[in-house]
Length: 410
Image (cartoon, rainbow, N blue to C red; front, top):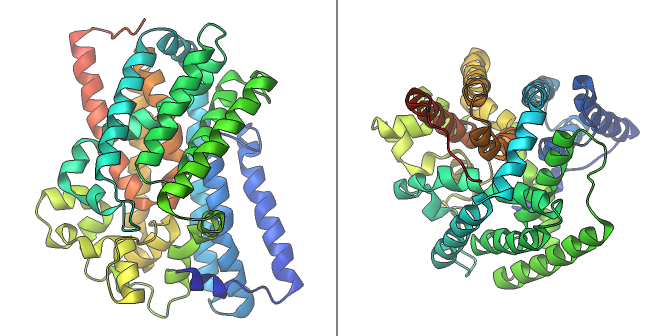
């Protein structure tokens, strides 16, 4: 879909000024909540910028009308403010979370987590294709949903643990070992370099917890980290037979769903065969036998690909929040999309409240919560998925609180 980038054309100076203003506003939003310009939600800021680029271009060339432009900016900036507000509430408990996190990685938690990540790395290595075919196809199977919640929680916790261990002079070596393990697991999954985003997110999230503008990591450790990351990227690119140019393209292709909907003469076409319930929560609709949810061709990214290419390549774009809402919740139905978002934030707040009496569990789940907030706008499917995970975790916490036992990893 690289040809989609041809729509990004700036004809006037006003568009460049508008782009700079949008960038400044994106950077300024966290300051409204008393946070640093760059936080653990940096991925949310970055993807919004790359999605705003084609919208500004489309307004400039009149490829999209002002109404759609307003639709995009209202949805995206409202959600950005919402996730930063939620993040700010998480950080209210920073002292408790930080202390519990250090206890977790000073104890046996490091070894349990490493063992799980190694097992998942082997599992993914055996299942993920390296011949250029989609690595997403098997992840859409029902059986994979049994593993996915554990992977979703363990992966960001591993990135987070790398930096916590590096801050502990007695466990710095374990930090490097965990770094190798988590990068290896990510490469085995078939990812080109998404572990870079994971590490950056973890670095900034830990800095936010500590409450400083700089993370007290040694200069020497910083260079070692850079070396490991560079070598890992080279290995991943070699294994998947892709170039640095492909990685750079991926940054711009964060906006492919935005382009395919906002620039379309019929932006709802890809979603016409999806029921309202399935568009609000595909997993629950599939569980109840909804035919539109069972049909994999109706998955948002795949459906867009079919509309564009006429065939499902199983490499469709992520369900960008604004694009997904434009396609699935047109006109007054937008309230249904907003309802899902509100439920997502409410359940997260409810989960955190339930975990306050169990700081060790909160520390284990905290990196996942930060990652969820950071990537939610880039994929509405993850919002639906995390709603399910939140419900499961809330039920688990209620059960644990009923038996009044607390796990220990010391």
